[in-house]
Length: 370
Image (tube, rainbow, N blue to C red; front, side):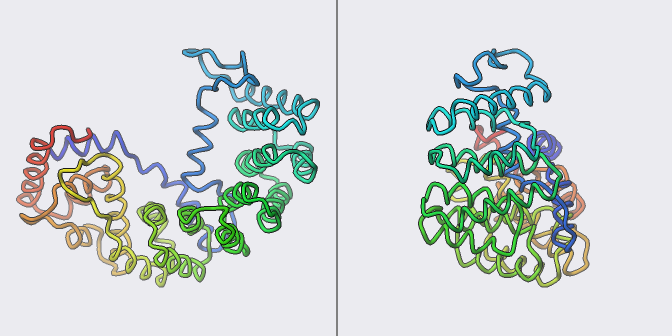
């Protein structure tokens, strides 16, 4: 049973974020790197780029046939450039039609992030185009063009316009778009000011407010990381907790945190163990991942603070007695790295009891997600 659960977990959930978090570690240590988006934002962008193109009339005939190979990057870049030229030639100020084209360009991706294209987009933002177009232009700039260039001057210009728009606009939809793109660029001296203004004006939700703090956490300096942890704890928002715990679940990242930040994170995690609810209410991949992230973060941070091996921290944190919740045992085995620590933490007799509890839960809950 142990090997089956480990195998299933390994096929479902990978610690694919390791390289991203390792790079984020350089930011936390004070070295500036163009890391790219936080994990969830990067995932959304990748999904948008890689998804089969939708029914938009703007992309009719381009990669729309189901079952065919997706266009190459060069083809997508060419199509994005064609649509961008078409928009600037005849659709500027057209409202929904223009917004549709800009959104399609973002979905296709790979519009060349040249100085000419970026300057044109920045100029359009300052013009009298419709709000719908401005919202999509803000997202195109921050989600696509910013990350598709390594030119620091272009990145600085994009960040500057996003920040200024978020801080100066009176339109909630514009503030929402500018804020939620800007906060995914990293951590800047005015990041919290941008976020707080949007929240106070009602342009973003409480979940956005605290969730974005968690997304910015890896990029912030140590002093601000401590402040962000305090703010997130005070917010008592489950989404922000899950985002932050997802960050802390990777030991490559947590090993780069200062001891003060590690201790603060351990204190927060001790208060924030995810509640799995009624054992008969269902249990699947989402619940297992959230709880495994919490356990992984707790194990890594406790081991790093104490200097003890992770297996020793796991033995203290994972309850394996008769009253142990089998769902937590399943979650502990949800990824191969976590399962390996479990196997190193306990003797054969204890592992056999874990196996028995997991098997019994599977028999009594045959619809558990595989």
